[in-house]
Length: 365
Image: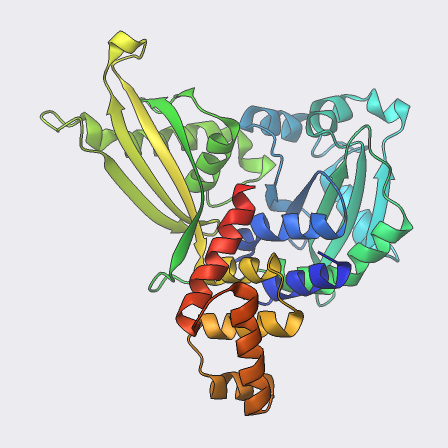
């Protein structure tokens, strides 16, 4: 994407009014397209600057996060709260830091930043009015160039959109909106809740499924909480007389999205498996509206055509599109025809499916 398209895409994502945790997995990659970096994170804070939650594309394991909290979180030199306050009180909402050779020898860098390959950091403070409520961090590695003025200015130009997107939005506890599968992974656990074998993405999904909030303060209790959650998922499979071929399916909504867990017994010990092992497929779904916006963001549509495509996906007529966008009926009809041609579809009923397909193909890459 060009810079203008990246900014327009971020603005559209931030205007969806979804819970910030739901948006985080889509907003951070979009931000990294605008400001090249290998990963990013968002940290939410309370009025005192204490971290209340986080989402990171590269996340420390629970034990390492608990170790960080015990050793470094409140440290004078590298404490999060004091560092956040300094950035929040600075004249600019954006700042950078590249770790010197001396800093790279400190326990904090070895325990935390080196594990994340975070040798250069770009910080952005998000505000709700006057109050600073969150921090964006973008990371570059040892072999990367430091962040400079251009990257700082680019991040600064979208902070108002990010503040709207990452602000607290209540989770809709009513009827669930249509959702789309965006990722799924398979792991193997034991019936007592301990993980036997699982890829890192599965373990990250498990944390999001089991926890409504991820933060260093709660890291010491994470393992026990996750194991209790897995035991609850596995328990119905252990009922005497239950057909081992029949899986147990659990689904629930959370701030991170909708999760569906499919658990099934792995009782074939002849293949090197323990008789108490359980396979668990974890699937994360996101609101369909979010996937549709992502589809327009990676499409070849112009900014005007993206707006028209989203309204077509919502089932709007040409007249309704004209009224909503402030266009004449003929102009709206012209844009509708252009959307059909660009997406290679024949009618409005195919637009949504095409956008979903484009979004999911982009994720698969």
